[in-house]
Amino acid sequence: QTRGDLRCLGAVRLAAVGPGTADALAAYYLQADVVPEEYRAEALAAALTDQARSGARFLLIRASRGREVLADDLRAAGGQVEQVVCYLSRDVTQAEAEVSAALPEGTVDWVTVTSSAIARSLHASFGDSLANVKLASISPVTSATLRELGLEPAAEATTYTMAGVAAAIVEFEAQHAQDQA
Image 1 (cartoon, rainbow, N blue to C red):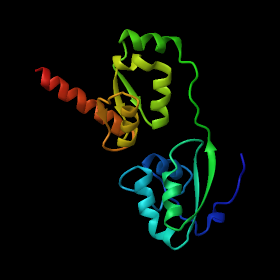
Image 2 (image 1 turned 120 degrees about the vertical axis):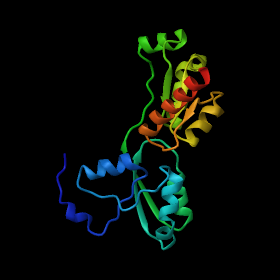
Image 3 (image 1 turned 135 degrees about the vertical axis):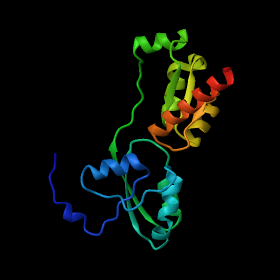
Image 4 (image 1 turned 60 degrees about the vertical axis):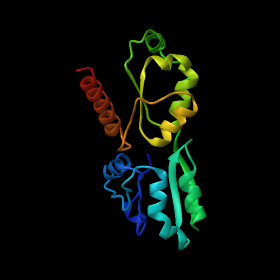
């Protein structure tokens, strides 16, 4: 671990795509200056467009894969963008035997899908077995990827967080129980 002095950040402004990232910054006594109301790259790009138009420089610290929309939108608006990969996102190449057996047997009720990369990985790993479960998507972008793969999400979060996914599942189940009554 490298130690430094937070004062070196000086006038740097911090942005986070959602509250989870803002909370992670806060754990290091850093406050996000910008967190869009809608937790997706397009909303963060829109919130930063005025700064980009003035030629501001942006350092995007991100996962190894994902959509390029934030960088592309900031560049298109006139911003200078550098990207640094801070963590690797990799697919599991072999699911645990228990999971591989549970999906085709129908003993799993829900699978949460929290990114398009995860949607693709799930489809590659489990294919038709995913027809035996309800899929809960974190966002419209992830839902669109599921649909491209021939999978229909049963629930979609309206707040693009894990809490939003859980709320979408609860809402679906409550509605289903009401419909059964």
